[in-house]
Length: 114
Length: 113
Image (tube, rainbow over all chains, first blue to last red; front, side, top):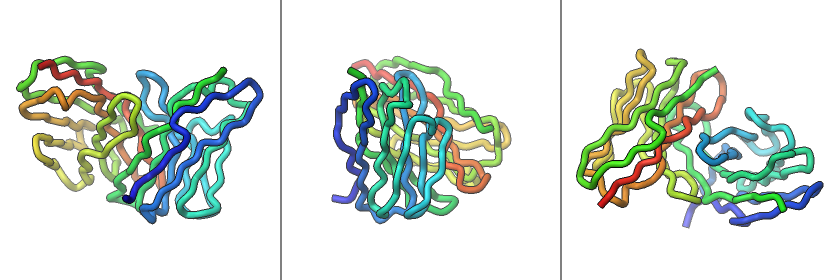
């Protein structure tokens, strides 16, 4: 089945620890995105990548880092500099380009602080 | 900077009722507008995408309209069912470069049997 796979579903972070959230897609999409969702809030963009080896900061990039070494993979690292990391993290992808850019989402990772 | 607002934040209706969800945006220079559905603890599913040149899109019991000049979109759900209970989010893509989607906070819908 084609789609976007996020893992793990639940993740716990200790103080001062970096953690990495995985996002893999087999849709052959060029563009990939990371969003953060807090309870009762809309989605806020962390980072996005239009092509391999290139990515741009979104609205709330501080305390996060990403890489895009392969087209199908876009991992997100939540660093110790992110002081309030508890949230639901959503990865998405799209075919790319402008115009009819339908977004496909993974099932999310819930990150909590121990 | 584009801002997207959804009213109401929550809505409860009896089964079988027709309902309208509202979405407004501040910058009318948009490429398209999408409506998504999100079930609790899950990712988002795209329901309808309206291009800037279109006025509406339909899928089954769902109909989305777009009025760019007034910065508004509505999602109409006909003959609501308990299975329609979810949070509905709208998102717009503006013209400027490769700017990704800007999301509203969503409307949480409960359809009571």
